[in-house]
Amino acid sequence: MPPTELLAPRDQRELVAALARTTDASRLVAGATDWMLGRRAGGNPPDLLIDLSHLHGFRAVGCADRRIRVGALSTCSQLQCDPVLATHARCLAQAAARVGSVQIRNVATIGGNVANASPCADLVTALVALEATATVIDGAGRATERPIAQLFASAGGSALRRDEAILEFAFAGAHPDRRSGFAKLGVRSSVAVARLNAALVVDLDPDGATIAAARLAIGSLAPAAFLAGEVAAPLVGTRIDAACPEEFAHRCLRLVDERIPERSSRAYKRLAIRGLAADLWSAAGAGTP
Ligand SMILES: Cc1cc2nc3c(=O)[nH]c(=O)nc-3n(C[C@H](O)[C@H](O)[C@H](O)COP(=O)(O)OP(=O)(O)OC[C@H]3O[C@@H](n4cnc5c(N)ncnc54)[C@H](O)[C@@H]3O)c2cc1C
Image 1 (spheres, protein in one colour):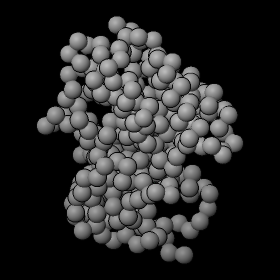
Image 2 (image 1 turned 45 degrees about the vertical axis):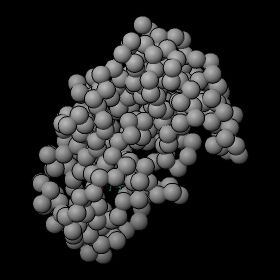
Image 3 (image 1 turned 120 degrees about the vertical axis):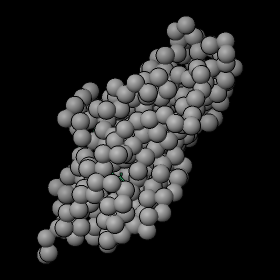
């Protein structure tokens, strides 16, 4: 078997040149936390490995044209204490803080979390709630901006082509009074992938208390996280400083019944999602004046 060739592009031009050389046997890698698990499982080594970790230009969070931009190579450790996210997209910072252990978060990237396309990926759920888009570049140098949901194949897994890489994510960040939060349930406290996760984003009226718009994303109930409009919409017009509405928790429970009626984990998830709804409500800074 020929040895794996390694390319480590340092900018977009070098990345495009590397992507142009990919075959079906080639692979991309960023923090390698998921990638190494796949390698340990066996299979042939790739003919070409593109190491994205030197693309330093895509490792930052910024704000331009009323949009927040998050480089795909940003690590979870970076995102969990980023001041822009702390102000405008707390759910994404909180999701990053809940990924794995410190060692994992120091190298795991947001691009890898999305491209790995796990149904329980924590950052994906936050990005879905934020209605994020992703900028993707291919081996011909074509950059396209796509809604996050289009990065996942309908039957699960990634919809990215082998010669495509995610460069950055973007979402609206201009609402003057936005609150958001993330909550998850896992089997262990420190390095557990989620059995259920959720992100809530609410925009408040100028009175600072009445909900003007709400979005809820849920992970682990489908091949990819999705927006649960029927659960979030009735929150509009209610007050953020009230206790977690009983009906909100109940609508979450109904969602479990509808989405996984046959799955063996349904009984556990029915019970757990009520607690998750309450955690989510307080993670979003709701229930307090
Ligand atoms: C012990 C452990 C605990 C974990 N806990 C959690 C958890 O609590 N929550 C959670 O969500 N995840 C968890 N994970 C999964 C993992 O850490 C995350 O999915 C991580 O964000 C992946 O990022 P990475 O940079 O390491 O990706 P890599 O492993 O480098 O890549 C993953 C996949 O994405 C592709 N890829 C990477 N970057 C790009 C890009 N920019 N464009 C296109 N394709 C790309 C690679 O080709 C590969 O197929 C855990 C993993 C481990 C090993």
